[in-house]
Every structure is written in C-alpha cells, then in structure tokens.
Amino acid sequence: MSYKLVALGNPLLDLQTNVDAEYLKKYDLKDNDAILAEDKHAPIYQEVLGKQDLHLLAGGAAQNTARGAQYILPADSVVYFGSVGKDVYAEKLVEANKKYGLRTEYQIQDDIPTGKCAALINGAHRCLVTDLGAANHFTASHFDKPENWKFVENASHYYIGGFHLTVSPEAIVKLGKHAAENNKVFALNFSAPFIAQFFKDPLDAALPYVDFVIANESEAEAYAESHKLDVDPKDVVAIAKEVAKLPKINTKRPRTVVFTQGTQPTVTVTYNPETEDYEVQAFNVRELASEKVVDTNGAGDAFAAGFVAALVEGKSTAKAVDVGQWAAALSIQEVGPSFPFPKQTY
Ligand code: 26A
Image (cartoon, rainbow, N blue to C red):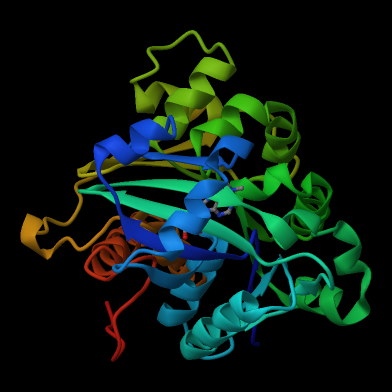
C-alpha cells in the first residue's frame, strides 16, 4: 500500500547565508536558535536577498523530514500537508519535493505569500528566523476534504513537526485521534525550545497521542524548565523518563522518547506502564571528520527522517536511531536541509 507516512508542518523556503557573530548580535539573535520573526527582524529578509552566497532551499522542518523519509523509502511512500501561497517560493518547494518524489497536498492561500526562513549560518551553528506567511493559515478543515482524509486513513504512520503547534493544534489532535483510535504510529518532534516554553498548552494537549517524541538536548531542557520538572535540566535521561510516562490515549503502544545531543550519544527511553519499567538506551553518533561538515541546517530533521522511515519499514527503535544518525550524517555534508544525489542507501 502506498503513502504509509503522512507528515504535517509549515512549508517554508529557506534563505540560507553565512553571517558573523556581529550580525547576529545586531538583531539580538543567538547563534543556534529557531524563532518566529518579530518586527525588528524584518530587514533581515531584504539583507539576505542581496548576499552573494545566498542559497534558496526547500525548508520547513517537517517538510525536510518528509523529503528525507521519501528519499529512503520506496516511491510513493510519503505525503506532506501544509499551507503555501501562489508564488515562485511555492514553485521552488514543489520543484524540490518533486526531485525527492515527495507528494504534497498543500492548502493554497490566494493572497498570502509562502513562508520563509532566514537560515543564518555561523560556523557550525545555524540561527533560523521564520516569517510563517501562508504556513500560518493552515486549518484542520483541509482534512475534511475527502481526498485528503483518504491519505490519512490509508497511512500507518504520522509525523508532526512541533513547530506546527503554533499554527493548528486542532489539525494535530485530529490526526492524533485517528492514529490512537486505529493503533497507528504517531510521532512528534519538539522542534525548538520556544515550543515547550511558549506553546506549552498545545504541546501538553498533543502529547497523550504521541508514541514517539523526537527532540534535541536544548528542547529537552526547555521542556524540563517550562514544566518545572524536579530534575537536572541537563539530565536528558531523567527528562525523557518524565515525558515517556505521561498519560497516553493509545495504551496498546508504549511511548518512546528520543533525545539527540549533537555529537554526544542519542538517548532513547521507553516506558512500560504495566511493569512501570523504563528501557534506557544510548547510541553513539557516527564520527564525521570536521572538514566534511558543510552545514548543520536540517541535521535534526534528517535524523527524524531516517528514524521515522525505519519505523515505517517496521524496524526496531535501535535500528531506527542508526538510520537516523546515518541520514543526519549525510545531510550535514550537503548545503542546507538536503540529501545527496545520486541516492545513497544505508
Ligand atoms: C514556526 N517555525 C519557527 C518554523 C520553523 C521551521 N519550520 C517550521 N516552522 N523555523 C525554522 N524552520 C525550519 O527548520 C529547518 C531546519 O531544521 C527551516 O525552514 C529549516 O529548513
């Protein structure tokens, strides 16, 4: 059966360019962050368009993951939902997705431009400043269209970018309910520290549906702080245990929490509510010579792509982490959230 994986997120075009520390400071930006643009950031988009080293790349965190999962899986495996405008930016996204064979079922906004993300690269770090544009106007009603809901019903796995919690928590819960009621696999990425900090309520409302949480160490820390967990905010295993044991609607599946930590080991924690036991595992990342690293924009999305693709293939959590780490290593050797062609296989 085709289109086993349905992904939902904010489709964005990445405007990627190199900047120095001074540029980030001028706009009050951290060197490794992902934020929604405020008015004071508006000039950035004009400035980057004038830069010699500008790359226009298909972005949007969950869209990157969807493209990456389709890169790994057989043809016609992944369908992605989100909202775009009617403009050249959307055409660029369609073109990139076509190259990977990713099917998109966009909700199209007539009068709102496609979202964009200034991906400001500073050495090994990347700061992402997003103007959501049309992506902010996605509505759960898109799934009321029978042709779209058919994809949802047909799929076995769902992947949600946590960034979409700022847009349509209703759409996320709609998919989560369907997954839980039909014992299908539902995965959510925390996406960025600001989601746990400022979108705590929609995040908490989505978590009961989630079988797999995927996040990095700074998102884990933000979760621990915003939820006032009584743990060391640097202790990813302790935080993963807290998240893994949160109430769950589909009791036929345990919850697994996966925390990546850059070049430090990836940690997974699975909670078994019957025995009240935790299975804790740690997996070293693949070593990559520093001169091979082109940029880390999209590394986390690529990890999620490999992880979720392996789940779709019915692989174990351990194998899924391995495929995730393989995909991340591939992607950081490319400019932006991309994979190499001709295609590589793991
Ligand atoms: C709501 N926000 C801030 C966002 C994003 C986002 N994708 C969805 N929503 N901010 C940055 N990104 C994307 O993250 C990718 C790297 O992980 C960027 O477009 C970039 O491709």
